[in-house]
Image (cartoon, rainbow, N blue to C red; front, side, top):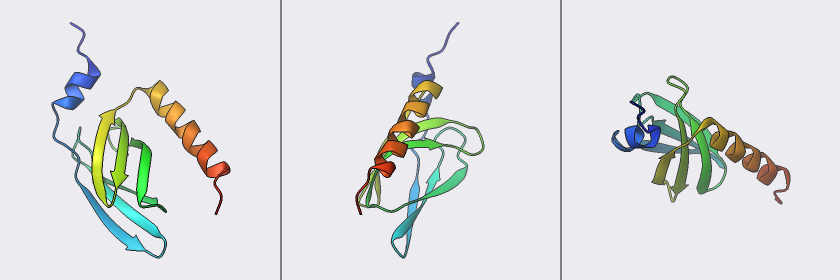
Length: 97
């Protein structure tokens, strides 16, 4: 029996985030909704919309953070994750300061 990955993730608990601001960067601590391990990454804007990979279980998610609040967290396939990473790289390449 094939189980849809998205249905499995939807039944998991929502991720929890904590935000620490240091200079212009914000350190985001996020709890993986799949394995409940805490991970972290830094962002320079108050809004982040992009991919996140859990360092422990390697779960892939698309997250949207706005005003230090997690607005959405959706599971991704490896292909979707790669595409989002490419988009993020292009955005940062052409970003104007």
